[in-house]
Image (cartoon, rainbow, N blue to C red; front, side, top):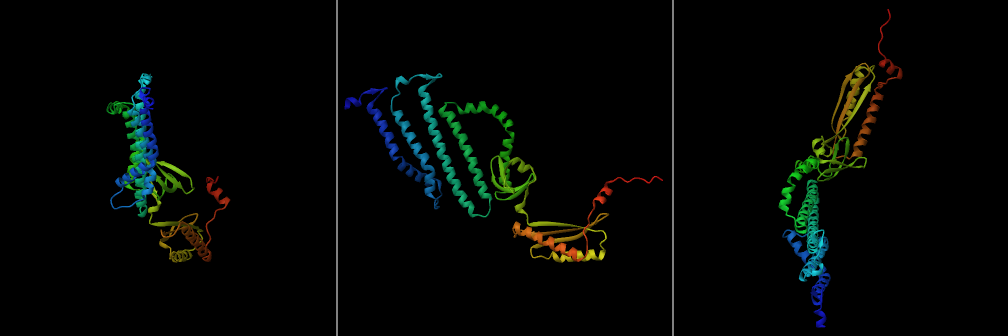
Length: 370
């Protein structure tokens, strides 16, 4: 048996292969228990002292990448324990095969590590979202979503740099120096993206609107559902989903409907010129009494204009924000009907135009041939 274990294959004894295989099998068996223990240690590092959050949710997030990280690490250490066989000393496109294997091992470790870090960021973001949901302000919620995406992008960039350094063996310092000119050209080419990124920070710190606000921009009205690094997503009143670049949200005139203090309604009456002054004054007085409605906070009724076509009466009134959209529309309908009733009771007719009158008004005046 000892002689069999001492047999050499590809530069290593059978005993060495069995040790490595046993270590890998042991790692596969105990990975779940070890990953749970390590997840508990990470949980204690992530949370603040004295606070209790969902430990199971955290363990479920980081358990899988921890298991993969543990197995990959054992495999790499095990193969490093073995001697590299001379039979595998050959080049692939002028690169040693041993260097390729080392690069693959390093790349795998880096990718799993970045994966683990992203899962931890997801958990921290979930905890912060739960805390932010307690407050009435939506600012905290949008900040959590924004910075979660931001740190994920930063981690991805760090991961790419680590891959270049340890997987491909390139000097990051020299690479960054060499890419400075290229970076300047890329910055010019991606100027809009950078402007949108800067605009996203302006939105978060200036707070012209937050997630959940109803806004009107570029003839679109809708609810802000997400503010990203590049664009703002809006669910319109037609239930469509549009993305507006953040730069346009900053540069354009944005009407934040959610921040209005009152709802405005307007009614324009065009009455016949034949109406008398006394009847018109009485109508205005009756409409002003009508404006003393429980849901109307402020109103104005004025005889604004007269001319060759009609007498114009303009009615404006404001309701509070404590009523819903349907209730406000019902209020406008009620006021419209009651104003029409007042006009009918006063015996006043609305100004109308016949087709002959419109044609006459459009025809040019000609002189009499005297």
